[in-house]
Image 1 (cartoon, rainbow, N blue to C red):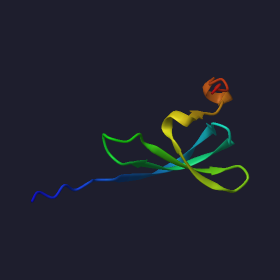
Image 2: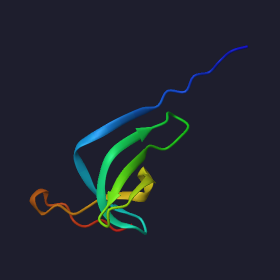
Image 3: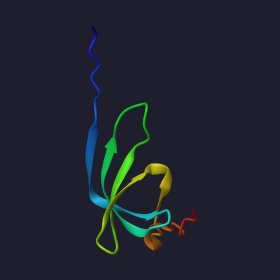
Length: 75
């Protein structure tokens, strides 16, 4: 019998990344979770109202940053 191990990686984002989460508003991505090739990476986001939620990377977009000339994303 062959045992298959799954490797998971977590990365604390320092500094956090400001993101626009689909249908939930803005927040700070504080952790990136990668379950491997079979799954999309996941952001752990602290929303502006204080709640913590996990979002697929496809459901998040970077927020506007005037100093870097980045416009507000549309999702």
